[in-house]
Length: 418
Image 1 (tube, helix red, strand yellow):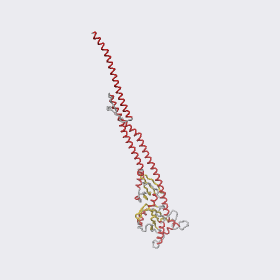
Image 2: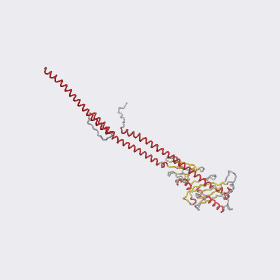
Image 3: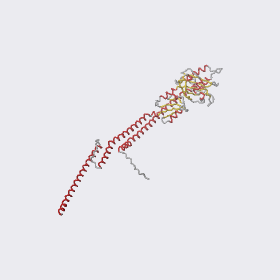
Image 4: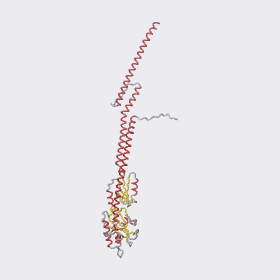
């Protein structure tokens, strides 16, 4: 069964159409354009920042690789120590350091000359670079006796060998490796400087005598390096103030961080969140062949804050423009639509015979001209109707007079005949 309810068709007024037209043809395209421009600016800025960070990370990686290479060379000094000038390098010349370690007296104790010789050697190594805090050598001699020697230019008080071995993780140290070993940052407290943090670089020393491919572990030479040495490599890159830089190994142990509280800790979770976060950008550069990574993280919310602020300002301006159009349309409705509605109402009065209608002229614009013409039309229509009405009355009167003139003689003749 069909519904008998009338269907009301929605009709927009003139000013509503005008406002809608202005929004669709003016505000909406501007909104789309501003959004596109802002997003394009963000993408371009992000690409530029990422390129800048990759370049900076690559520079830090190369500088760190050069730095570690230089310390690796220093750690090879036992193989060339006390080598006479001009003498060709042979297996026997590389054996000078080992032979120095074998000096023992009849009681199995180190001779005073060994202590002095090792002190001279460690001091020599410590003075190669001003960033070396301390030099250590730990190992064993041919009698399988444990050897340990320590020297620092910054402190003469060595607390405990057990504390030192625990700090560097000597029990888990790979004594078969012939490459540079990097030990995560730790406290320098075993030398009485608990307020300092150092990173230790180590390299094993082997007996090169015997068949090729066979080697016997003798000891490990270790260097305590100031953490500020790595910091100096980072600071010259002039990174974004809102960015963070981390230098980690494959297990996530932090060797350097912009935030000092992360140094010496495992930050695997932190880096995973930075790489997967929507509000962060992470760039990585590998420090080959030392197993380190330079990771630069930028908080994009802070970096893009100015662009986002500009985008918000554009949205605010567009919103204000839409409101101005809305208020303007309301104002125009009073100036344009209301007088037209008034004319429509007065036309209804004219249709019912009221010709004494006079619209109030409020302006000198087109609406005012239209109001005057309407008043003029109403007045002329009244005059025309009055003239037509009077002419009709006169015609009727003339017809009545003529009829009367015809009726009166005929009536008179009839009366006389009777």
